Image (tube, rainbow, N blue to C red; front, side):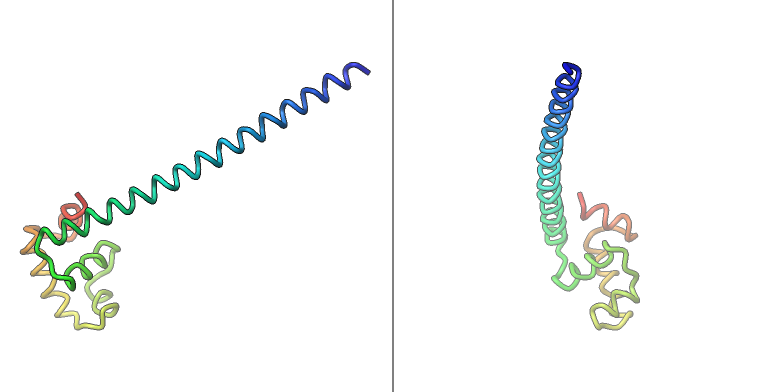
Length: 112
């Protein structure tokens, strides 16, 4: 009968360790999520500051945010209820102000 008590003790120890590990994992996951949210906020603030520093207007920043999400000019026009030619004009102004010639280069520069 002594083996029963030993096995019961080992099971209790295993359960205790498992519960402790789950709590540690949950705490670490919460910390990672908090850090991720703070990082996303910092990146967004830096992006907005870089747009402002480049001299972009509020409308141009709206367009750049949609470009950043991967929207094409036609999609941007539909989203903002403006003509596609207007988006083209805004994009030319944005490129000139930022000193870039492609969407990828533009977004990379503004994300720095």
